[in-house]
Length: 288
Image (cartoon, rainbow, N blue to C red; front, side):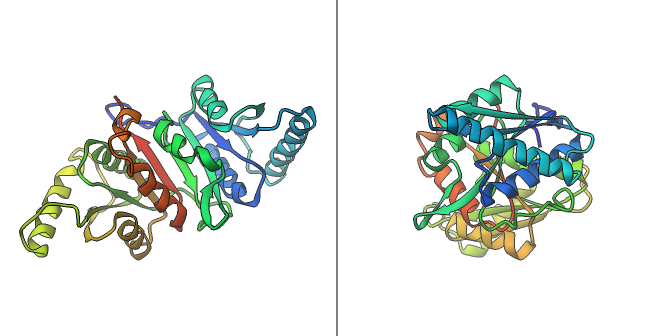
């Protein structure tokens, strides 16, 4: 699931999973190890210690070694190179530095519930991760069962509102579906804010026609992509289609940082989907 180039070639040499050793992050580690093993990637397991104490740092190293040992015993790390990284500092700046330093192709995160609202395991830095991560981010939400996936995703759902960043997400998902020999579906949600005067069925027909043009003609997919045009709230309808179609991966495109400032709700909608999805969510950003 590495960031494709302009020709959308797959690259997944280095995978980074962030963990706080909670039950929630266990699922992220399982997905990351499965992906790394399947792609012969180097796996980096990172824990960021926010406390300045030496004892907290040592506790982090001990807990991290336990994670590595458990995965070795379970034969999940067979044939792949892994590295444990424990650093002190603020969570997102440390992870961002690691993404650059280790040339990370995919960042994997877990989530957990906290104080009524479900927050990312990284808490208040959720927005910064969605806005600023330079590589694709796979988030394993609280609705995803914390167990090792049986294989790659077989049913990939991409969402688009026809903006450049979301069209990129569809092309990314199509390349991924071809690479994995998976089925692909694409959903477009027409909201109450959309300006249209035609009937709902006419709008559906027009948007279905537009969806067909978004699928890259050069992609050789195992089956004809399923196309959906829905009406209502974006997170609710995407999640609804994901359930009905039995998607096991959702792909979303996000704005660049400078563009996101003009669309404050973009990351929040993605976050709401991550929060409720029963499958992992992959967020990707269009290259500049």
